[in-house]
Image 1: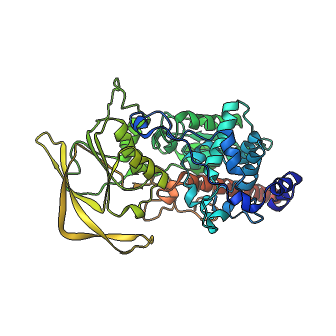
Image 2 (image 1 turned 120 degrees about the vertical axis):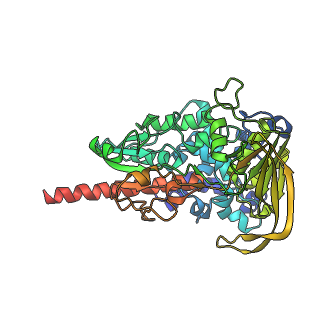
Length: 494
């Protein structure tokens, strides 16, 4: 059934007729309940956003006009049928809404929490064209997924009969999980190989529990297990196993979603001082290794004057984590203005409420340490905005001769990541771009080695969870078609 036929169903027509469009657009957008800022700035394991009540969700769902041309869907990288699940919530069919989400999304509870809906589906909502706040699609997605989990009545998407074809997935981040879910639905025998001891990739090591609880990620992973996806952890493809090993084991297709876990630094004087680390190391140690625990074998240093360099979501996660670990002064140092920050507006809002200082139009140029080699100060170059760069953001330029000195005892560098080089370097003949990412056909996500597909940060070099998931879905559809065509050619030649 296509979108027009779905929309023409009697229940949808009756629902639209219950309220005039003007009445729907006059309903104010719901606001997500949150933990108290003072309390939450001292607790690392409690989620900031508390979720909607059923009454709040149904009221927000009434704001959706059930458009004939649902432009919101054009902004969704995984193609969720947004009007349908929203209208199901309006009727109180929360389980049906969750089932609709699962038709296209392997991780609805995750996406409802961490995806930048304001830049994607919600930015395309018809309400924004009327200068009104968009329907809270992300909040509603989270609500439906959480309601299903809490009810214990977990739905399982429709699965095709097994075809016996083995498919390998390298990496259990959002790209790999999304790919695995779709391939399992197509009937393939899917195994996901994860280098770390925990399944979930960046969802576990990169995002703090106050934004995305590990328990939520585990539920989504168990949902994939329920449809037959197998997981093997502590296995580094490229070291523990090679791509050739996977071929010899009978895997007929391989998806590489190994991410971009290689940190970048700024190569400035003093950057090797004790107390300076990448956001990757910092968040991985705290989130995955429990390094903030009193009995940790590899404790993380808990600075009192912490500066985080960068303005993205990872920088916000790092500085808000530092605050929760006891930083008396936790600062964002960013070379552009706040308007140019790539972080979600919600993350910036939450950080400010928690007492984070924003030192914008500043860029570190030197670190100073004590006799023990530990960082004690940083020199900041004052910046101003010049002309827009290739991304459209105004480029920062130095204000000649104007610097500031800032006392710090810990610095976390969050200025981007590079692709994990293990797979690109270990597969002979695999085409790699000048940035170290795997080269793919953007329409199919297929590499120059036909059986290998790739997506997520290993292709993009650093992006959002939902874009990685979109890559995984696209790659799954393409690999399925490629295998079907290959098998048909074999049959025709027999």
